[in-house]
Image 1 (spheres, rainbow, N blue to C red):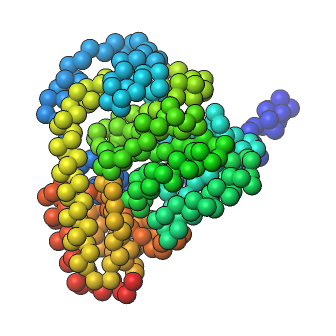
Image 2: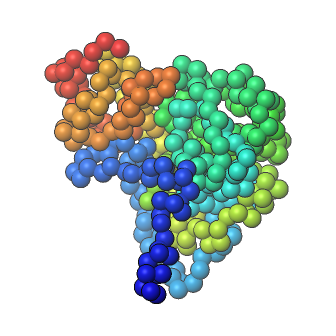
Image 3: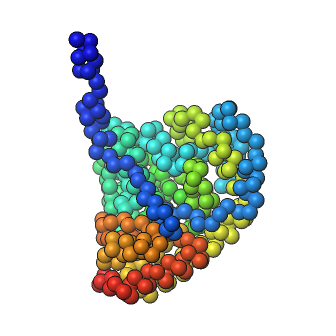
Length: 369
């Protein structure tokens, strides 16, 4: 009898899990061993000479919790960005900070506005936090539909957060700063500007954080600083806004190793700038050479990746994979159509990739765009 009672009390996962979570597909990274990775918008270069040795020689007490305030790293980030340490909050990658922001300002009965196509984790974090998503697609897939965004914010008081990815992933588009500031000035929502690729674009709204109480800037060490494996991101905003987010942040959310790596990376800023300049030149080469391939649309970019549109992207991605290159097949993007995203590799990797894609194009007509 007791055994039967215990069996009856067993958890029914399907009945217990939130239905919006049940239908959520977990993020999966597809790694093909031996292929050159041109699919994740990473910095393809190794760390500057001496940086790894300096990090590994740093003393860590692994039996102790990290500095919960990450004070030394916040001081260095503040110096790098020309702000105060009190205007900086660290996260375990930008993904955590997106979720922290929506836990703080989103939730049940509240909405997040995004501009698809854009970074997919915004919508995922909204689902996890119970926040409704309001989509305002980009015009022609590359321009903010500013009028519609403002109209929706005026008509829908539930919109509490707007995220603008600038430059935008996956299109590489850099939106005009004045358009973003109109959203900041003319709505009551918190406007989060995700500047993950700002080092490649060279334009930032950091200088405006104390002019507008509803402006938050998001940054990462995963792209230009080549620290994707260590999961380190940060946000910049006025002190009151940062204090609000800090209430939701998990204690000790950034480990000691990543904190120290961030501090050391900022000491090597000059070396990283050299890498960034090489990547920017490589992106221009990729853009010019890809434009020479018939029946292939290539979007201009201000990031370290580029969006292309052949008629049969899945087939092209498969053929390039067979030649040793992994790129990102984005499928059918609303407003754009079938698309592929290519990250910059090293100059040698990019040269080999261009040869491979030209060989595929010559042997397999890409079709009329």
